[in-house]
Image (tube, rainbow, N blue to C red; front, side, top):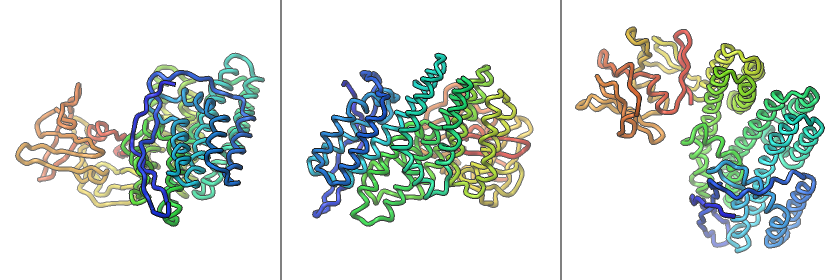
Length: 495
């Protein structure tokens, strides 16, 4: 198969008697024009083969035998799923094969190899579920074959129970989430009801919700692995790192689509292979921001689809929005109990084509998200809430001539920006995630990393008032990849 390998460094630290450290170029990504292989939806033999590999590890069979068995049972099947993965996203087979080759060469420990194969195949089964529910069940129901659609859902349930349920329950136990209950007591019964009613739109909603719920699980499993890296004994850290690496590769492409800089923080930690590069709090914050960015993006997408009259599409996207907001469950803590009703409300509003209700629910979701990571304030107040904690500030104000909200530079610092002011050029520069925006007093232009932003002019310039520099909040927030919500003088800024 012609496949381009995009080499990024993954340092796999191997605990050996001599404490040697080996460095490999590992991460394999889908190319732009992969040779297509069929996806094997005959799941029973694959689940049996998966259990057989787990048993071989439990029996401490030689790695060379395990590699041979993997190639016989899974190589072609995994390539079939890899060919369905979006170009630029990580692929499963070359990552697993890389580990097995180096394990056979004695460069990786048995525990690392076991984690890579197990979690790598969970990655594969997750993408197989995507195929079973979308191409399989949805395709069959669309074609008017409910019997075939139910067969695909039955296969999906078999894969979930045999390959993923243990991971779901482990994350539930660690983070106090209720994902297993949602999947088994709500989603699979909903699939059955959708098929009985021949309701393709509802089946698509629940398919999207299952998909995003599993993204939540793999992200939390990644976070749990990061916690392990910091807590387990030195000899156990390499296996914890590779476990988290394979969990994260399952969802890296999705999270990067919401917030690339933060998604890369997590990737680089696990790809470093070096426990000293792990900062649990930074990884946790990055995962939170990736999910919040998706909440913002899908709120906008639902509204865009409704504006175009695509109610069925908006309903499906509402399922995605539900999933990413629900991913904030462990971070909202007790507050999630009161926020949870918004998930059902967004499904109803999206499916009903009620844009006003979607907009109102999206605002409430943003308000909850800001209590975890973001800022919110009433224009003119002397306090701003930073991730739910009040801080004293110089008040913001609305410029009457433009209707724009102007904030002191301190607000942007609270959002994580570095702010500088050049008195000579009268230019304010704000920097975050490698992006620097420069705004000059008296100019309607914005420079982004030193270059003019094409087709963009400020409708509100920088203002200096009582020796305080005020910047137009919306322009900076949107140009830097943040989202801003405004309602009756209350402002929310999140990823």
